[in-house]
Image (cartoon, rainbow, N blue to C red; front, top):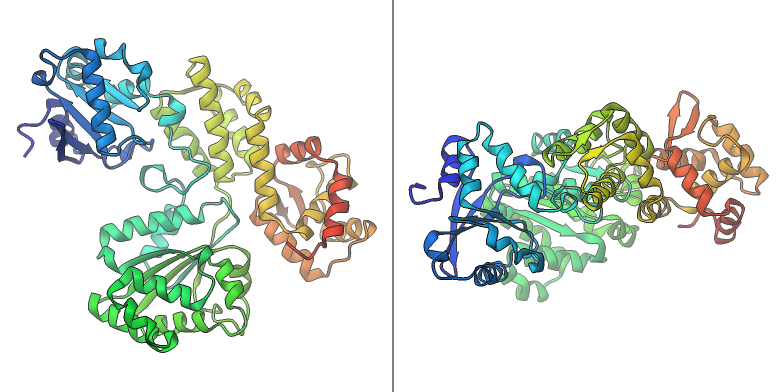
Length: 503
């Protein structure tokens, strides 16, 4: 195997242990897939490689070669991936046409391949070539808008191990928006599909499944769509339990359901709980395992004695990253991108404190730093570099949007009231008695239970943290940005008008 492969791929596969597979050829070029996910960058376990052999270059202009490579990328739908082209010849003439090339194509010529082959650090040599040709802000794994898996997944390995080690237990992944619930669910799905019969692993995005019938139809469509006509002829509530048991027997194992964004489904089911009682029954019979993800509604139901959620799952609550997790998220990709740190510990401490350890904000923060490096051509981050982040409108908007989306009006009112009451926001602590006092002064009276719930959500959101009997603002950047962006008196008045007990 691999005797007719490029020498560079044979080295990485046979001597360095990288997984390499031949892929279907395209337009006369031989294609490969190499697993570069261990680099923890935007390079997957199936990074595409196009082999441009000497015969492919004979009598062909550089422009035509680049156009041909572009057609391969389009034909194989690789436009959103980083593609490596191994050129068995001089690659320099091709670079003249690369500025007009809209794809993230890395050209590695014959001389560069020899340098990798003869290097005492071939992995590092290859990484140097790639990072010199792709903007580091794009090559980085940081993602602030979408779920991530594989090489771009950081920091929740313990939670995944806990899920995988307990196949007979249902799990509820709980946490605020943008804390990483969907990424954790998707990474769990990816691993399960590699380890198990993938047909019995079912992922459902539940935000649009607002009725029992919607849910059942979607499950049948996923597991055995041929039974959909039969489903329409029967009462769903009688058909579905039997269907799940039959599917479990067919796979000779439990069906594993990963249910994302269950909060709206919970709201629509609250009352008769028809669907969730069926799910619980299927779990009790050993036909199914459930791994669900949600926020407020799922949290509340965990502790309601009359809810089918009570004692149904083991809770996995996602909060901010530990300092060590944050360090890994910051340092590992940066080092692989050949970015240096000056006063490394100060930089990490500042990023961790100013983001309150929130993984989404850490990634946004790092992405801004890398974009500035792309613009300047530099490769060093120092404490002075961090000043640029505070002036970035995208970061401040992202910070405030995260707060607004994760809090209800009573939690917002609590924050505004505390910030209005002191000139030393972020430095002095405040007790629940202080919270009650400033809210009453502003015309809002909350019960002790409501204050507890509000403090719990704000703590989970990383806005405040508790030390003994007092709370403190977690991030000085958050309070500073909020004060500079809004009139707190106006915000407080608006939450009172809208109703502090409503979303």
